[in-house]
Length: 215
Image (tube, rainbow, N blue to C red; front, side):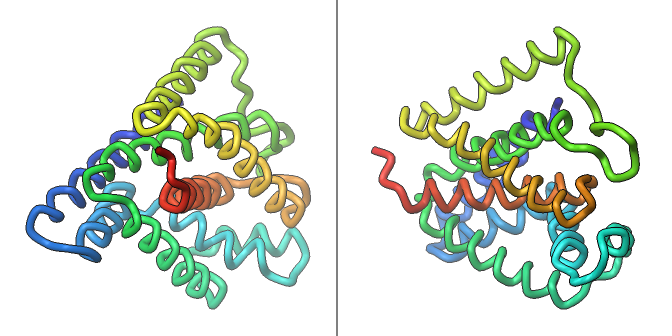
C-alpha cells in the first residue's frame, strides 16, 4: 500500500535532479538525468519485471514454459528490443516536459502508476497460489487506498484539473496490461507482471502529459 508514496518520492527526486541540471545544461541532459535517476533510485526493479515479461509473455511456447522463462534472470532478444523502444519513448516524453514541471509531473506519474496496480492484487490470481495474490478488504486498507487516490488526484489538479481523467485511464490501462499478460500465463500473473505494468503505465502517463496541452 506504500507503493504510491514511494513512487511519488522517487518521481519527485528524479524530477528534482533533472530540474537542477537544467540550470546549467539544455536538453537532452535534464531529461536524461531524470531518466537515469529514476532507474537508479528504483534499482531498476520494475524495469527488470518489464524485461522478463518481454521474454516470457511474448514467447511462442506453452503457458507453463512462459512462467519458467519469467523466473530466468537472463534476458533475451525480446527484452533487448523492448528496453530500447521503452527507453526511446520514455526519454522523448521527458524531453517534451518543461524542466520546471519535472518534479510535479514525475511525482504524479510515479504515484499513479503504482496506485494503479493495487486493485490488480484483488482482480488476478497469483501464478504461484490458488487465489488472488492478496485481497484488500480491511477498513484500514480501504481508507488508505482512498486517501492515496485523493492525494494522487491532488497532484494531478496542481498542473491541470483535466489531468484527473488520467486516474481512471491509468487504472483501465493497468487492468488491460495485466489481463493481456494473464491470458498468456494460464490466467495468472506474477510479480514481473506488476513491475511491467508499473513501468508501462508510468511511461504512458508521461507521454500523455507531454503530448496534451493541459492548460
